[in-house]
Image (cartoon, rainbow, N blue to C red; front, side):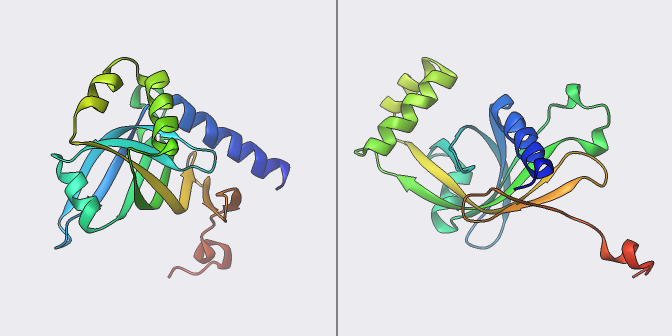
Length: 172
C-alpha cells in the first residue's frame, strides 16, 4: 500500500469512526427497493454490525435477499459542497449473528459502549437481532474527481477511479 493509499484509508477510517449510523438499501423478494438507516459498529475490515428489529421492512428484505448496499456519508452541515459529500458506499452480503455466541456478546458489548443504555433495553426485545454486513467491494468518494475503489480480501486495496473517456479524449 502506498503512502497515498494509506492516507485514503485513514480518511475513510475517520469518516467511519465519526459517523454513528449508516444508510441501508435493501430489496424485497420481488425487487422492491427500501431505503432505511441503522446505527452501526464497524469491524476491522469494514464489516458493519447492525442491530435490527424483525418488525422493520429492511429486516424482512435482508432475510429474503441477503445482499445490501450501505452508505456512510458526511453530515450535510460539515460539507462545503452538498454535491461532493465524503461518503463510503459498500456492497455487502449479510449474515445473522446468533445470540448464544461469543461473537454476539462481543459486538453487543461494543454497541453498548457506543450507544449507551438503550442497547440493554433492545437486547431484551426478542425481535431484535444482530447482523453483520460483510463488504464485497466499495467506493470511497472524497470530492469531485476523488473516487476510490475499495476492495481486496481485507478491504485494504485502494484504486483511484478514473474516467477512461476523458483520458483518451473520447466523448462516448
